[in-house]
Length: 40
View 1 (cartoon, rainbow, N blue to C red):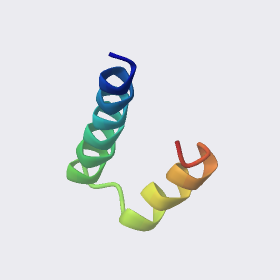
View 2: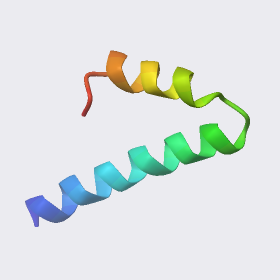
View 3: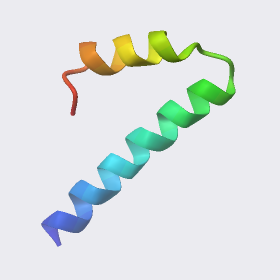
């Protein structure tokens, strides 16, 4: 059950980045945000 929760959290994060990209945020900015958040 714990593995499913971690998988779901990872999926939600990926969907968020995809939505930002679709809204027009440049990929280098998304990479910086990813690195600042701690690569989790």
